[in-house]
Image (tube, rainbow, N blue to C red; front, side):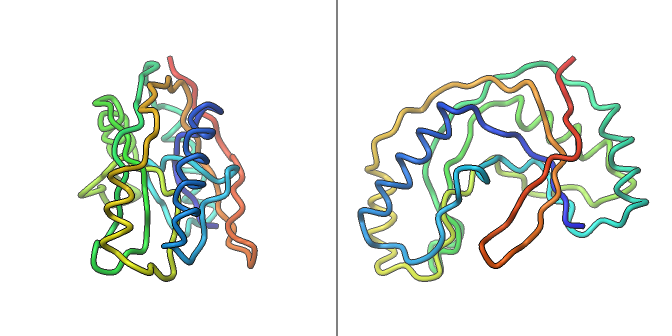
Length: 178
């Protein structure tokens, strides 16, 4: 199974992201898929294909994870690869995010390689084609949205099933703050 560790977002943050997506849709600059509301999340670590034995080890290690509630904030809009845009994202600010990601890396160090360049972001669109990269980048700088603070008190281990209609996610483990 394909698996990942993530943070689910509060409803008010999802509302804000949907508004950002709606603003981008209206530009008609992107031909591609916008992340469905029920699939919007912040990935802390992508595990990839995991067999049952390894999955059970992951669950065991993650159940030892200890963290306190922490706050994050929606930050900048951006893209991965300005030349050939494949992902449009909203970054997330908050030092605790990097700490918990490092803690996850540490607790899974014997099972998975360390994340070398973690960047806290929420994928909001996956363009197949962008009509004008420069205009899209300008639009991303000018979209008005609230850089809302939000509290995180859970981390999730989820499985991902790729379907013709898009990915389907299922929560397999919920880790609460201590």
